[in-house]
Amino acid sequence: LAGKGTEMMVDLREYLKVYFIMGSVNCKKNPAEVLREAIDGGITIFQYREKGEGALEGKQKLELAKELRKICLESQIPFIVNDDIELALDVDADGVHIGQEDESAAEVRSKIGNKFLGVSVHTLPEAEEAIQNGADYFGVGPIYPTSTKVDAKPVRGVAFLQELRSHGCQVPIVGIGGITAKNADAVTCAGADGVSVISAITHAGDVRAEADKISKAVYRGIEER
Ligand code: TZP
Ligand code: MG
Image (cartoon, rainbow, N blue to C red; front, side, top):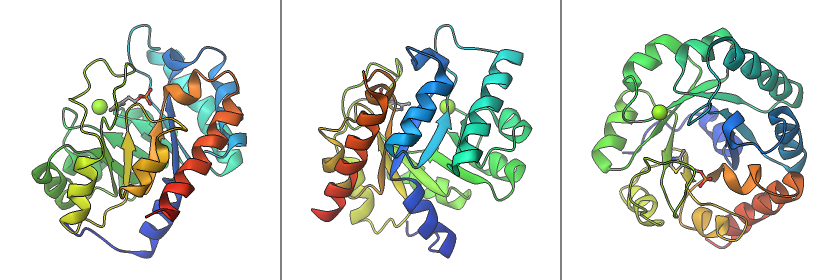
């Protein structure tokens, strides 16, 4: 389960500290505005995840992707696309994130070259397979209860995170699901390199301030290890 340990991975681990994810459905105001404020607050990587009821499709999805991609480029924040490989290639994203129900990691890797490849894993065999297929990082969750993903798997707390690390897994990992400024420290303390967050940031009254609080909690958790 060790995975790769290259120089690039050292950088990726840093980028994964505060991993903001959203699509238009998650936002209560203009997504570009939300993204700009989150960047001001200290997010370190962004994933465009256009999913759920009312999600944009076709040209509208492409246009929003381009707009958010541009903001990320200007701020030197890596831009990752959820599931949609074609879109990721169209906007020249920095990477792709896929789940177990999506196209296989090996196939995706063959299409995206050396772009980052993130894979959601829930079991040790899934983690092993993802490494074999070229995953650069894992998404692990849901750590806490969430209402953002309707088909989320059962909540595991930080148990699976700890299990991966205790099996010698050195792959960069982000925790996901119900993560807020109040519990992000527990996630990194348990061994995650960073946290993925949707609603705590998109639904915050002050997006910038919330991202900043989450960022501080992430580093606090790492220091408490
Ligand atoms: N995968 C597992 S939980 C989740 C995803 C995409 C949703 C996370 O959203 P939130 O609002 O941060 O709980
Ligand atoms: Mg998916």
